[in-house]
Length: 310
Image (tube, rainbow, N blue to C red; front, side, top):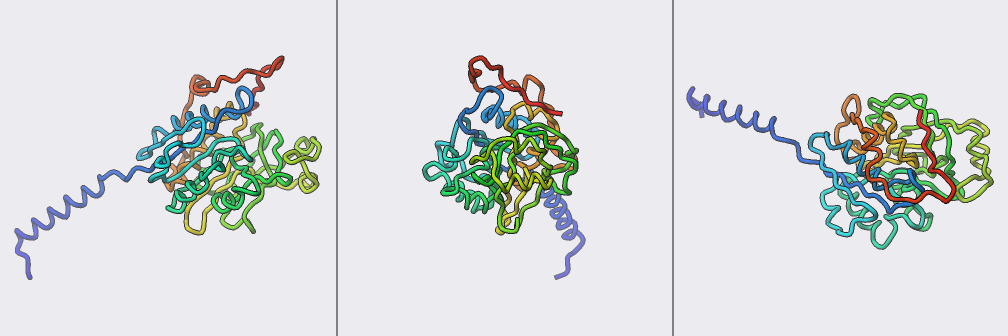
């Protein structure tokens, strides 16, 4: 059938309207769930609630992003996980890990099976060998393993960053934290991309051997000057994404622009949100950093330890 000019005009007009509507339609919101574990450690350390609330505030300006927060433990309503694009957990680990109680691993696994990403911060990268290790390694590519990995406090020098979306806008930096290393990674580190790599100094093996403090394998690696991965990205075979970040013992370290930007970038990346060319910009004030800290009494006779960020 041959269209006459008037019909052609109407078709062209309809196509133009459809194109404009399609281009201007907002992208579907991405939903990120930030889970903070219960308070632990002394003032200024393991500030899970204040940490996730600060991350939520720093992400508030990202278009099309919806960030939900659960404070003080695991979400009580399983529907919290409905439709999530990423879950980030900042909590204690080991037997007290919030993801290891009850059916929590199953709930988390169900969300990840639908493509959601997973990010684990600091102590949250440590499950137990008996429960969680297999899942964590499958989901984020690595985990802390007792009597293998170690947790010293040291000044890690990150002299270079990889060409990866998580590293966009992040400059080399040095910062003191409880950087875990000698992590247990997926076999052959399949799907794993190191993001933060540093060479531990001799102070990292100054403690006696112990479940978290040292072992012959670590001592030999440090003596050889082997670089250690303390943060990494992971792509699962199903296309889902994971992120491990062993720092953030000290709450004050969120005040370091590169430290903070790297984690914010990672949260977008695991949710499959395009990371801006210069990374996620945020400008928290000293007041923001001091907000929402848990009321923790200092140890008797001791002042709270401060983070040393350079």
